[in-house]
Length: 302
Ligand code: MTE
Image 1 (cartoon, protein in one colour):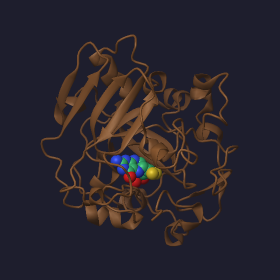
Image 2 (cartoon, rainbow, N blue to C red):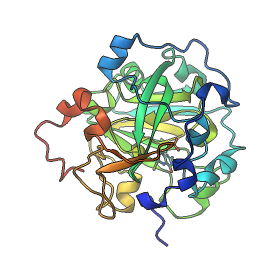
Image 3 (cartoon, rainbow, N blue to C red):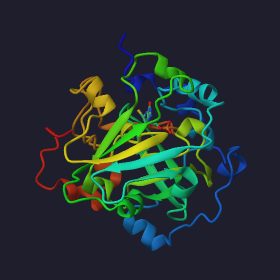
Image 4 (cartoon, rainbow, N blue to C red):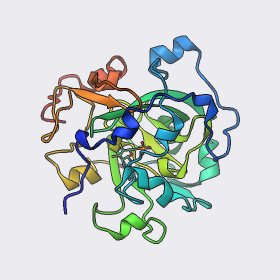
């Protein structure tokens, strides 16, 4: 059966037409992040670390999810992930590095104080959100393990444990979920290891304890619940590309000019808004990232 990432028309209308809530009245039950740093406005604006668009309510960010390890039903992810145990989590950083290391999650999160970054997230299904993430640039972790000169790509892997992740008992995707970036994309300051949102530790359904966020790419690049990061010489496999290579490319840069074979990418439905809005090239982060793709045919490398 073809499930795949769904077409834009399947976005739940109940969520779309709900008015924006007052953010401050909603809380998550995950612990508060201590010493969350925020950037001064000028630095945040120049770096793309904080967009001015209204933030999507926490309720939507935590109850309208894609996380196939738990459910293919967006509203079913939160209840299915509710008992997921992340105690004792470790992340192995390995491959073409001088100092490979297995991090306990607490040590990994101590690499840098968490910073608040307010990013747009554009799903390939043509819905979008604005999410106040907490975390730090992936480059801080990569620099610590000292990549070797022949490390050209970074691959990422989600936990494989069908006992704890019931969706992995189905063959909707080949497990574990894997993703990848070119090394310069991985080292870009916007590329983030996120461990929280709205000032609290990541809810389970959003990829606890740590996930990737790459705001100029479609949301499926943002692999959740990471256990392995490996620096490699050649372009790694990625889950959605392997599922349907004509629909989901390795690069997956947000691009309103290159349609998905089954729907347009020119506009998007921001969750919580009533009208569609135009999709921006590189999701509005062109000033920061367009140079990474200078001279590249973005139609061929979608
Ligand atoms: N990571 C894993 N391991 N499994 C998934 O199914 N879905 C991806 C991405 N990361 C997914 C994943 C997709 S398609 C999107 S749009 C985002 O997570 C959704 O993140 P959110 O649920 O926190 O909004």
